[in-house]
Amino acid sequence: MLEEKLAMTELEHLKICPPYLNSQEFMVSVAPKDELIVLYRTLPTGDGAYKYKYRQWSSLIPSLPDAQLKSYILTNYTKMDKRALNGNTIEVYVYKYTFKGGVIFYYVNRSPFYFIENVQFNLENMVTYQGELQSNFTVKIKPNQDYLIKLKAADITKTYSYQSSSNFQILDPSQSE
Image (cartoon, rainbow, N blue to C red; front, side):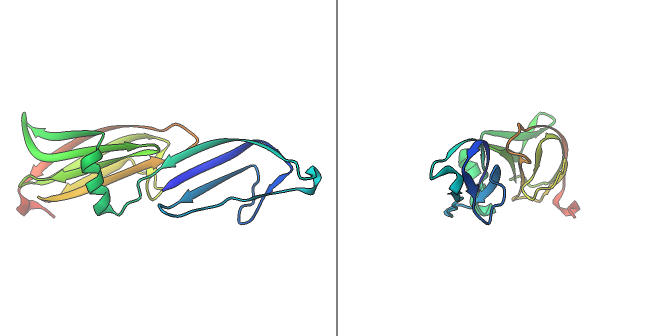
């Protein structure tokens, strides 16, 4: 999904057309394979002449269905961490995929254990894909299951950042909820 905001720094003899109302700035979201046109019309006061300058901010948010997104992340991840307990790795992997406008954490449990991780984020200008301000996640994954945490910039015109800390436990699968 392309999210883009344009703010005019100079605008003479132009007016935005409906459904948009504010000629000075607008925000659009365009789904993959879709098209969108934002149309301005010239005003009679300019006798056909017009002038504009603008600032633009954009974000490219992966909007694949989860199954395709997971496959994509497995081949294009930014970083991969293996969870370890007492110095021994367990077959739980966390793939981090960063993109212009956010980050996705993809947890994969290939262990025979039920995996639970409590993740606390310190988020600056970030929300979930649903637009919720959520900083604590409880990742619960049965053997051979997975889990996604998807975060994006709340305001694409501002910088965003995150820090995280977590703790986890593994349980026998019979102890899962």
